[in-house]
Amino acid sequence: MHTNNLPLSGTMEADWISLFDSVPESTRNALRKVVDEHCEDMAVAFYARMMGDVDARPFLTHDAVEKRLRHSMQRWLSTLFSCADRDQFAAAMAMQRHVGEVHARVELPVNIVARGARVLKGEIAHRLLQGGLDGEALVDAVLYADNLIDIAFEEMSSAYVASHERAARIDEAYRVFSYGQNMSLERERQRAALLDWENRFLQEMMAGAAGDELQTLGDSSFGLWLHHKATAIFEGSSELPAIRLAIHSVDDNLLPLCAGQLENGEREETRRLIKAVQAELGQLKFLVGAMFERFVDLESGKDALTQLLNRRFLPAILSRETEISRNQGKPFALLLVDVDHFKHINDRHGHEAGDRVLQQMASLLLNTVRSGDFLFRYGGEEFLVLLVEVDEAHARRVAEKIRSRVEQESFLLADGRSLRVTTSIGLAMHDGHPDYQRLVNRADDALYRAKHDGRNRVVIATE
Ligand SMILES: Nc1nc2c(ncn2[C@@H]2O[C@H](COP(=O)(O)OP(=O)(O)OP(=O)(O)O)[C@@H](O)[C@H]2O)c(=O)[nH]1
Image (cartoon, rainbow, N blue to C red; front, side, top):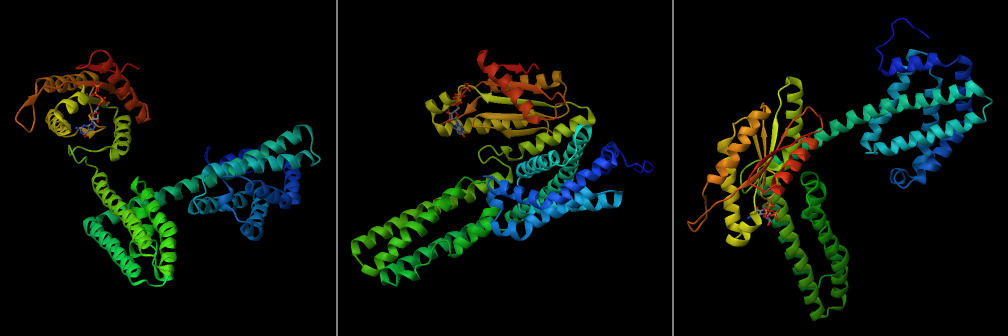
């Protein structure tokens, strides 16, 4: 093949050229003949396998396979295996990128695509065994087919990842945009929409309207908002599934009973059903309120009690600091600061006293670290401090300062009494490892040892 103007190694084109050159032309031609002759039955066998695959089946319909997919697969195979120069290869790779983008749009998981590649390799190898090649030529042909499919899937995957990331950024931007809409106004509108639905439902039940006039919650203005907007804005919130369940219970269980009741009009039963619907609505209103409330705290990235950062942006901040540290060669440190015997404080002085201790702890931490450092409420009575650009001696001094200041502080309760508190601290220095979770785990292990060794102490993570 053309050895001048070789592309950089590691690029798809360079890999393809060296693959192409590594196999005699006669073997490539024999392979191409097998693929051309069998691409139809390979496509049939491929989709038969994928239709029987529990993960792949939801993405396939019999109709789509018959009308489009099988034919596309045949074309895909014969195009890929017929590449004989750079232009044809470039065109084949453009095709892979297109397929990768389509996969991203239909959200086909990468593991299913990888499984598809495995199935295809098996189909090709199986036909090659009967294709008249033997010995070295057969091995060459199988390896060539395997590598070519890998190159194609690599190109497909890189387009998939790029597309997916773009889509994720747009989704996030949409969430931020939605958040920018006035959320308290939105909350009031949805509360009013639920009330409207309830009033209409009550009127129709009282007036004995025809059963088919009862509007479902899913079709109400609230239902449409939930289905089309809330799903994007509140994605991942624990209330969403519970809200959907409550709607399902009203629309699919209670309303059909109500409709039947309207026909035969028995008052006791009507009253019972109305009460049941109202109970579900009460639950629904509570869940919607909770969902809005938690969202505001979470989205702002602040913990409501202490006003420190909550965990939402911890992964983003840790990966950013890891990158800065790796680029600039300046280490950073993580401290996990945990209040000792906090349960005892709650039990003895009440939950409100516990809350006040946490608030005072937060301001003590704020006053002890520099403004460039990060402070998180990491868990109930656990704080995470990220000290930027520090060596171990410096981090150890700060940790010790926090420990001794807490020990000396008087924590004031609402009734004027005060409490003494101690903390245990696990300290881990970033050691250049790119996985930030490892650093958190090391700090956590050190904290565990600090507790185990008697509390009110700083322990430094070893490895
Ligand atoms: N007041 C209050 N208590 C909380 C909050 N979040 C978690 N807690 C309580 O904090 C307590 C933590 O208890 P444990 O994990 O057993 O730890 P501990 O009592 O501090 O004991 P050690 O950590 O082993 O010293 C639990 O009782 C939680 O209910 C909060 O926001 N406010």
